Length: 455
Ligand code: NAD
Image 1: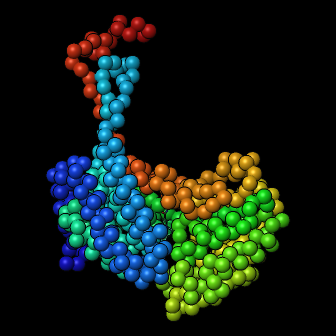
Image 2: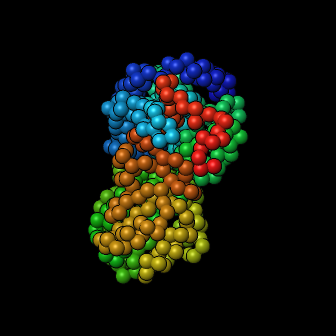
C-alpha cells in the first residue's frame, strides 16, 4: 500500500482513539513495554541503520539515540501512574464549597515529524510522551535518513496496529501537507528547520491545530578570558563535532575573549586531534555529512574565513573534516546561516557588551553556552540573553537531562518536551470543578439588586 492510500485511512486512528482504548494506565504501560522490548530486540539493526545514514558508531548510536529512547521509556514506566493522577485544586472563596481536579487528558491523534540528524531518538522520544499521555500517533521519520526511517517503520508496524500508531514514510513536502489537509490532527510535534517549521505552522493554523516546534538557530559558545581553556575546548569540540556537527544544540560559532584567543585556538586544534586523530576520516567516532546538498552548502562556507584547521573533504564518501576558521568575513553566509556541520568559526571580542551585540544579531538561539569562572559575568550573560536552554562551562549535555524542559524560544521554537514535560506537551490540562448540592445560596442568582451591597 502506498502512503497516499495509507493517508486515507487516518480516520481509523480517530476511531481507535475515540474507543477509549488508549486511556487506561495498563494499556499505556503495555505499549511502552512493547516499544522498549522492540528497541532492545532491534538494537543491532538500529546501529547498522544509523551507521548507514550518518556513520555513527554503535557507541555513539547508543549514547545519543537508542539509549536516550530507552531512558525515556524507563522513566515513563516508573512515573506514569503519578503523572496520570488528577491533581487536586483548592476552591477559591467564591466557589466554597467545591472541589477541583485537573485531569491530564490525552490530546487525541497527534502527528510527530522528525528530522534526519538524530533520526531515531527525535522520532521515538516524542512518541514515548505521546503514548504515555494516552494518544494515537502518526510518525513521519525523515526521508533523508532512509535506513533509520525503514527500521522505525519495521519496529512500529511489528508492535502496534496501524489504527493506534502508524508510520508514514516519504517526501515530507508532499506527504505532510497531504495528511494535514485531509485530516485534522489534535497536535503536531515538529522537529526540524525554521523554514519548514513555518510551513507546518501555517498548515496547522488552517485547522487551529496546536503545534510544538523544535527548531534550530545559531547557538553561540562564549569563552570569557577567565575560562578554563583545557576544559572549555574539550567540551566545545565534543558538542561541535559529534555527529559531524549535525546537532541542533551544537555550538554554531565561538566568541572568545581576544586575550586568550590564540591559546584557546591552539588548544582547540590539539583537542580535535586528540579526539579524532590527525585524519578524522579514519576515526570510528567521526560521522559523515547526510547528503551531497548539505555537503556542498558546508563547502561553500570555507571561503568565509581564514582556515585554521581542517578543510579536508571527500564528496564521494561525504567526509568533511573538523574545520576551524578565523578572521570571518563580516556579513558572510557562515554568520547568517545555521551552519549545522563541522565548520567552526572563531570570532574574538574585547568586552562583554561587544560580544553580546554579536549574539543579538542572531536572536533566540536554541542553545547558549558560556565558559567563565566569574559569577558576576555568568549572571550578566544569563540575565541579558534570550535562548531556549543551555549550559555554563559545558555544551549540549542539558539535552540529556529529562528534568529540563527541552525547547526553543521565538525563532528557535514553540513548546518543550522530555520526561514529564513530554507528558504535559501531549496532554490537555482539563480543569473540572465539582460543586455539592447541599448549599445553593440565592445570592448567586438573579435578581441581584440589593444582594450585593456595594452596588
Ligand atoms: P527539515 O525541516 O528539512 O525536515 C524535517 C522534517 O520535515 C522531515 O521529516 C521532512 O520530511 C519534513 N519536511 C521537509 N520539507 C517539508 C515541507 N516542505 N513540508 C512539510 N514537511 C517537510 O529539517 P532537517 O533538515 O531534517 O533538520 C535540520 C534542522 O532541524 C536544523 O535547523 C536543526 O537545528 C533543526 N533541529 C532541531 C532540533 C530540536 O530539537 N530543536 C533537533 C534536530 C534538528
